[in-house]
Length: 152
Image (cartoon, rainbow, N blue to C red; front, side, top):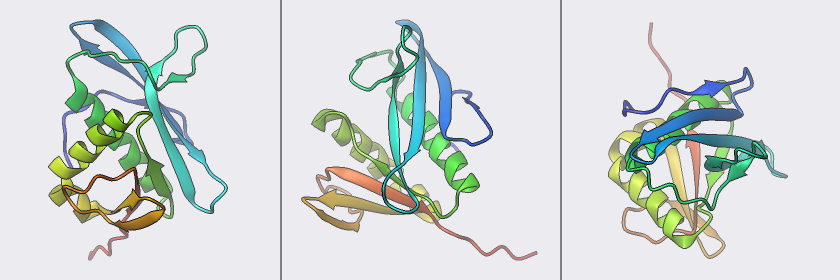
């Protein structure tokens, strides 16, 4: 999926990514981290502003820098990079608030037709997981890169 996104910086492990949001409120450093959970091959995606004092993710900061679509496209680019490096990985994501989870759902819905070519996408309702359905109010999401057979 080709979306306009910010340039990313990452180490070789591709588990932490940095980029700069550039908009009316200035240049705001952002972080995406993918950390292993207690479940085999399941990684939690954390995303937010980079706290200038601690260097850690602030996932409750509200930047309103006028570039939310480009920022979300950049986060998606990190998932592509990570799952290319770790094809067996499942990536879990949920917003730090209901409004942010809704924003993620809207982004998945908008690009669902393209995304489902590359990923298996699931949504969580109560403690149940189901294949993603546009218009459903999910609490969290999990994606897994599809393995493609390429002919030479």
